[in-house]
Amino acid sequence: MKKTKLILCVAVLVLLANVLRAQSNTDFPYEKVGDLSQEKLNVKALGGDSYVLVVPSDDTQRYYAVNLPEAYKKDGLNLICSGIVGKPLPNARMMGTPLQLKAVKVGKNYKKYKIKVKSFVLE
Image 1 (cartoon, rainbow, N blue to C red):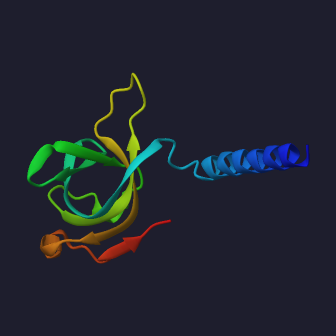
Image 2: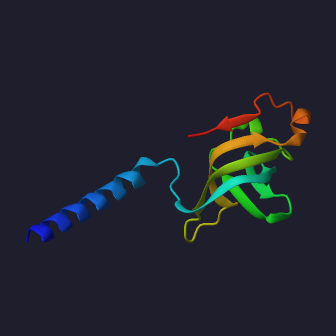
Image 3: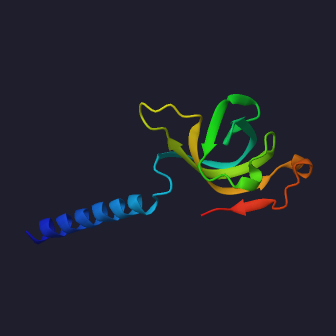
């Protein structure tokens, strides 16, 4: 009987911890499907205020960075990015795979874009 109560108590605590952890990250409402680590990407303007990050060798793979700094929204800018890749919402048409950036550094061609800050660490 004591073992059953202990197991039930531990299960409830684990469930509660998972719920609290899921609620703590409300800025990124997408389910995590992977991580991006030091990936070379190019900024691509889609028109208006819409920007995506594309893989240079395969511009069909696009990421929509939900927290891309304004200073880096320059068409053609090379970036090195790390972050969390999310799963797109079902039945939603998105311009790219959701991405929450954790760290961003500019690539080699930053001088022609007059970039002052060469890297960001985002939380």
